[in-house]
Image (cartoon, one colour):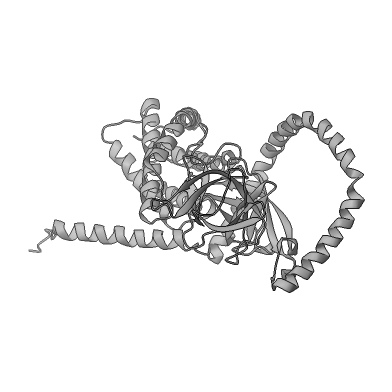
Length: 285
Length: 168
């Protein structure tokens, strides 16, 4: 007679198998979350198709939403129109000044051996399709992708300042990681403008409780004042210099009293990002 | 099957749509934010006597969630499957009705937030404090209840129209 009794696997082996599976999963999660995994061709195709559907489905909702917000904006428009009328008269003077400034920038670039400054970039506008589902990821999906010339590491800004950088692209979409993520591999180099002085530091992370960015690497002997503007320094190669990040909100010192820890209030409102611009180098065209 | 599929698709699109209109930062979570897709998966569960079909929908949705919303690999497949296991466990002592569906949805969404919090902290994606997690969970409860109630009543009505009864 056949022995139909199944052999029981010992509990210790089951525990080991479970631990190994958990470790494999954590390895995969760690790799894919930290290394900005590139989507493969099938995934890109699926994402493009779904974002396309989303854009069609969301269009009527966006239309109604924009209608209401436009209506709210109407009150401000009259006042803004009066201001604009007065500034039109200054346009020709500004244009002449611009030409002179451009000439000076080119001369300085040559003298200082700088490859790119902010004026060497053009702005490519994009609409946010979805934002940070599940709260934790600090990312945005925008409706422009590699088809529009977007590449990873391109800088994303809006009218108020720096937002983040592109971490992955498909043909028609891109994923933007916000500067509120502590990206230990790519800390953003910043410069704090204090009158004539320019101090360089690094963004160390984001304080969710106070909604401020933490800047470190500035000696305690240096003078920094509350309200000083913080810009990208251009060091590190990813972010061009001169993009506004925010203003100094508070200043503390580290535990050894050697360096300053500066809390910077971001100029961009990360709760309300609907449209963004991607900085694209003019020479890349 | 078709009603379940439509519920999941609409909820999936709602996740993306509503993220555009309500606060999405960690410190200022909106009362209108929850994970609509998970709620849909919880509400449609009792209408499947064949778990294989349900799992196809669950894994399909999880893959899309990974690709479209979180830019991750396998993460949501694992999380959604764990939520399915939680609901199968709850089947032993929690029959499906409006109240229990609400409790299941709250537990499922909470489990999703807790697991993502643990995983992201362990792999050092970012360091989040426990107070942020509690803030998000408490803020998601109201919308979870509202959406579960609406979806539960709607699916029950639609399934009733086609004479399909809850299995569990």
